[in-house]
Length: 493
Ligand code: TXE
Image (cartoon, rainbow, N blue to C red):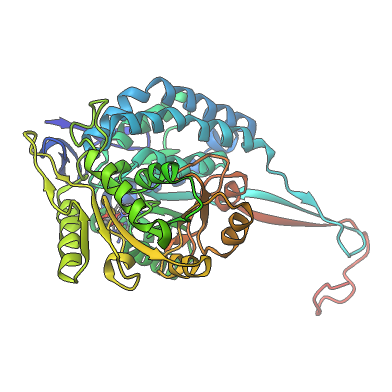
C-alpha cells in the first residue's frame, strides 16, 4: 500500500510512534494508502521547526518582494502539477476529477494574488498630537500558524490560509483531515522546490484528538486557521480563547436558495441543483434549503426532481459522471442516518432517499429531495453535508427573508429573481457572509468568503484578509532634547 510521510523542518518522516492510519478510496470502498498517525511528539517537533524557521535569517531576511516571488513560483509549480494533485484528491475523497482539476487549475491565482500583495502592505506615519515625536506603524507577521483543514476540498481550503499567511511572512504547521491527507502531503513538497526555506511549511497528519488538539493549544502557535464542522470549530475557538490565540473559523452552513416566481426558472433550477448535488452536497456552502414562492412551487419542485432523477452517479474520474460517492464511511452512515431521521420525523420524500448501489461497491447515496419541509425541523436546521435538499414554500419576500435567516447558520444564500430592486433589498437583509444573485457557488481569490453567526469567525480571500495574518506595531521616537517634564504622570500632551 502506498505510504505518504510528514514534512517537518524539510525532512520527510513517519510519525515518531511509527503508527500509521489508513485512508479509504470511497469509490472502490477500499483502503488505498497510509499516512502517519502523528501525536504530540510530532506536533511539538513541527511547531519547533516552524518557530525556528520564523526566527531564521533565511526567512526573516527575505524582503516582502522576494516572498512574493516565491509565492508566484509556487503558483507555477501547482499549475504544472495540477493533474497529479487532483488525482490524489479524487482517490481520497471521491469528488469528481473534473471539479478537483478545475480547483487545482484555479488555486495558483491565490498565490499570484497574495504574492503580488506581499510588498503592498504599508504602515503609516501618524500626525501625532505631541510635539517632537515621530510615530509610525508597521505590519508584522504573527508567527507560527496552525492550519487545520477538512476533507472536502483539502488544497483549496488550505490555500485560502497559506497564500495570505505566507505572503504576510508567517510560517505554518498544517494538519489536514485524517480522511483525505494524501494531496496535502504531496503538495507540501512544492514549497521547498519553489525555494521556500525548510521549516516554513510543515505538514503532519493524524486525528483531531491525537494531533489536532495539541497543535491548537501549543504555546508557540500564534493563530489557528480552521475549516471544518461547527462542533470542532467551537472546541477550537474555546481553546484559542483560553490560550489567547488568534483564530479564523470557516464552519458549516444551511444555506437557502430563494426562488421567486419572476425568476428565470430554468436557470434557477440549474443553479439550485449545482448548489446541492455538485460535490455530492459535501460543501460548506451547499444550498441545502430551497425556498420557492408558492405560485411556482409545484412546477419548480418537479423541475428539481427531474434533474435529480437524471443525475449520473459513478466513477469520479469518468468525465460523464455528475455525482461521485460520499467521501468516507462515517460520513456515509451519518448522511443516511439523517435521511432516515427526517423520515421518522414525518418529512415527505419527493425523490431519492436511499443508498445507490453499483458494481464498484462505492459509498453512493441518491440525490434526495424532501418537500414541504418545516423550517423548524431538524432537516431544515442541521447541516447534513450530503446531497439532501429540503424544499420549503413561501408567500412573500418578508417570509422568504425570515425563513432564510431562521437557522443558527449564516454562510451563504442564493436569490433567483429578475426584479433588481428586490435584489438590493433582500441582499441587505439576509444574514449571510455571501449572497449570490442569479448564480451560486461562485468563488474568487478577490472576494472575501466566510460566515456570520454559527458559520464562523473571520473571512478568507480578498485583499483585507492578509491583515488577519499580521499585527500592527506602533513605534514612538522622541526627538526632543529636553528632559521628561514629570516622570510620574503619563505623557498625554
Ligand atoms: O470534521 P471535523 P470531520 C462537517 C460535516 C461532517 C462533519 C464531521 O457535516 O460530517 O463536519 O467531519 C480536525 N482539535 N464538515 O470529522 O471533526 C480534524 O482532524 C483540533 C463541514 O471531518 O470538524 C480535521 O483535520 N483539530 C466542513 C478537521 O479538524 C481537530 C467540512 C475537521 O474535522 C479537533 C468538513 C480538535 N479537537 C466537515 N477535532 C465545512 N464546513 O466545510 C477534529 N479536528
